[in-house]
Image 1: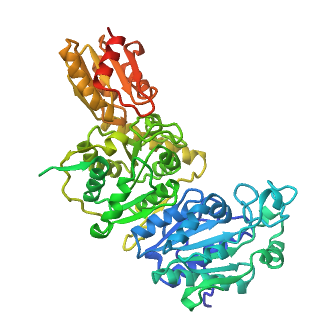
Image 2: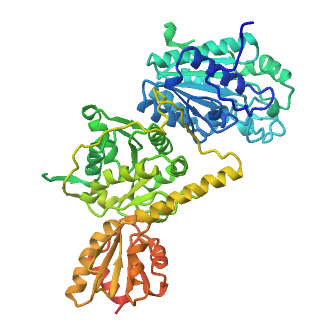
Length: 251
Length: 349
């Protein structure tokens, strides 16, 4: 008997506090696998956000710091400038990044900070109980858009991977989704590529991951995955928006 | 050591560089801007990292980031910027991060004016942000003391793993004086608790300010309060001038204490026994300086460039509010020594 699948060595024994069907656990695991495969454990610092992944510092046997809401890119700037040889991972959700921390992420991109941002977009505030985020889809029902999101009062969803790719300081920007085994492998490949660019000293590398929130969306886990594949990708297409490593300036 | 003629902000910046503070993150605001400008200018020759942040919110969080790696970093701002930074002050206090923040106070509230003021006293000494926390606050009265506080502020920040604020103001920031700058003598050592990547360290570090249930968080807070009590016990600093025989003691800090040094001379020339207590640490407030006056009839004249903030701490320290009087100036006007003497005579004929 050979072991084909096990808990990554960089994971602690802590149980994950995510809801059933949540995508964070998958994305956390992918990060753990890459760190382990590339032997980067010794030089990794992960900056965690405020949101559903706020306790993720407890899951990893690497240096971890929990930032204030929205401020992870600013804190990541301080850390990366101090330790340029380290792999600095800034992990953010959509409420954290696109609402509270829009200035911090935009200016990290404008300055071309040489760290990686893993942006988990589930189009809702999960931890606070399912309120509207700037990424919430039109007509989506949340606790603060009980009649569906309307443009008149709340504007439109924000496509971060596209926006960040427009900045000169961005080296790589891709949107992926953790909705199927194939898509999970694509996500892993994207995050790994982003980490590699960082370790080569390139500019901001940005991976947006569409992630299910069955609790917030009030859907069964399988339906939430189908919802991403059928509906969410229409607003947030899966694509590489910038990859200067491929000699490709813009999509 | 020879002295050099320097502006307060530039002297502080040069002293901080010599004390090993290689990281500066800041947002321009009068009257603090010479500090970021000095770092920007010296960055290539002194191998410094200077980042002009998009907001003070970011600048303070960048400082938190560099402090979390165990390196010396700071920012400088004024009241409006400090208000934005208070979120990170609360964070750094809870996360036990040793950072230094300069607040060049200017008259508020809101945008206000850009001259000397002491209106941020309550904000700086009572926390300022959310939750139960304190930061050590040092108030220089001269360019020399401002420069000396560069080293002291980092030493205190690292000793207690707590943010330290240097509370200068528009006057001390812009003043030019002869100053003796410190020698370069800082040697960086990695901190066992820092998040700088394990890189050979046998354990991983986790810095978080998120509670894990009320019992855990109560315990966390009690531990934090115990640290503050230790600081209050050990770090009260003040200067006394002519207090031995004084009937009246002026209490003033920072730039206004300078004026009061001349006021007590005028008073003595006019036969009034007046002394001065100059709090150097605004937090912890130097309560010990007032202990010996508890059962005396010594009168106190508190003067500040605000509407009356430190006066409340003096009343608590003296433990007799009837012996504590206040005179304040608002808007950025610093009173003259004679004006203060006249006020003192009006209050205590």
